[in-house]
Image (cartoon, rainbow, N blue to C red; front, top):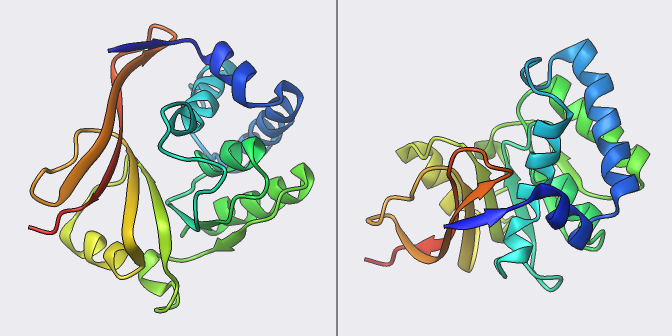
Length: 197
């Protein structure tokens, strides 16, 4: 298991002023539209920002990574910290909640970042759009959802999944890290391809 300190990861990969600006936007919006649990504090948000760039730290994402699809972007985790790390990444954010999609548009604009935002379910992404990396955070991998994601995978597309261990019958695990961040309970981030079995 890897022991991680959020402040060290942020200092290594992110501009603290930009992360503070992003989290200020998140906290201000949360007062009006409930983007996340009101029980979360600034330290909790910093942990999520640090976790967002953990795939960079682990070599799962590089500056050369091809088009990325962030499914269920919520308030921008992991996509906005990844863009703050490298603004040239080609990221498409999919968020079905209108209020969260509106926040993403505002946050990206205020941070001077560019990304496509799709305010819909993944089933409504144009058929020909293909992605080399798909990021998923605590998303239930139900059969219909996995089928919809698979339609948008480039050859050898890689999944980066923040959550429980992936089903070995569906995915070939490329890299997996079990970690504790700032002493919090153990978490997992996994890079995987769809299984060809």
